[in-house]
Every structure is written in structure tokens, then in C-alpha cells.
Image (cartoon, helix red, strand yellow):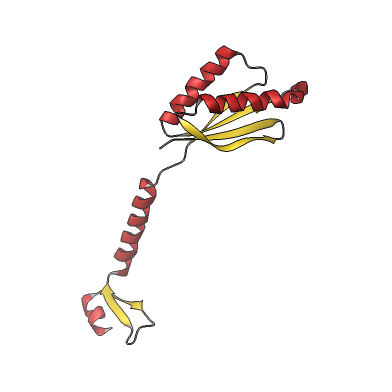
Length: 135
């Protein structure tokens, strides 16, 4: 402790359970700062998951379908997940089978760009499916 005081540094206990306990003389505030900096770098390098959403209707036309499909392809090529949902308005909820067919067709068209993470499922008035990009 006297050596640490003379140097103007801190005495930090590294492993208290060892016999004898291991201690190190360092500037503790600088050590904490460097740890924080390392954590920030690790966080910055980690991949951020981006989810793009595409909304379809149960009575979508072929042209509109292909238009949305091109957007989904671009999103998948950029590395983003694509959340495709069919939104049922009013009485169109009776066409649940149509919505599922549309989503499965969408997944089949995007087969070479991505794979289905979650199969179509109903959530309220929406039928949702998630497609992730292929590596």
C-alpha cells in the first residue's frame, strides 16, 4: 500500500481467493475508462439487426405483388430481415386462406435470397411471416 501511495496509484486486488491474494498497482480510473472504451468498441462492431416491413393485402394484384417482391429482394441483399404481413380490413378477414397463400408464394419467390424464419401466423387482423437473408 505504501508503494502504491508513493507512486500515486491504486492497489487493486486481482484474485482475493488465491493464497497469498494477488494485487496489482494501477491507476484504477484509467483502467475503468479503458474497460468502458473496449465495451463500446465491441458494441459498435456487433451486427445490428434491421427489420424491414412489407405490407400486403389479401386481394393483391400481380403487379403490386412483384413490386413488393423487388423491394424485399433488395432488403434481403442488403442484409436486413423482412417482415411480411397481410393486413385484413373489415370483412376481408374471411379470406385467411388467401392471405396464407400469398405469404407462402412470397416466401417461395424469395427462396434464393432468404429463408423463412417464422411461418405465417395470425396476430389479430394481421398474418405475419419473417424472412431472414441467406449468408
